[in-house]
Image (cartoon, rainbow, N blue to C red; front, side, top):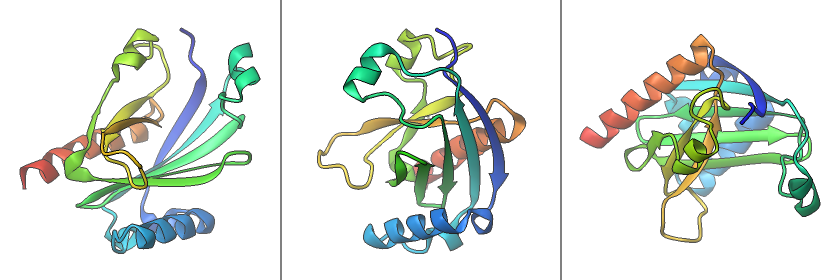
Length: 168
């Protein structure tokens, strides 16, 4: 399967997150009683994703395709939480979070079936109990990251932080 997005990532600290996303993240943290996640952030990464082709016919007919030709995502982690914010012109801004000791990262079975392991879109499937979920089961979310040095380094650090959180 051909790659659907061109992704570039850059490492950042929470002070470098733009004002609109900072506001959305702070509101999410307050609503879910996560504390001051912006002040507590250990590391972060911003990824710009540019769609390489339009969604297929079925996705266009059902409205299930990506509504944006470009979107940005910011992933931050604290010693206790992973926070992901995504924003695009049509999709708006969405923030989600999960306890760091309750998430796992890896390639999903579906991603492997669709050929997203080698040569597919860069990123990782993050599975956990996400804030705002109405069910008590873990669900997966695809976090797009660039294949560049910053995206790879962030993923390496995130894996280490998850391991550290689970062994405390």
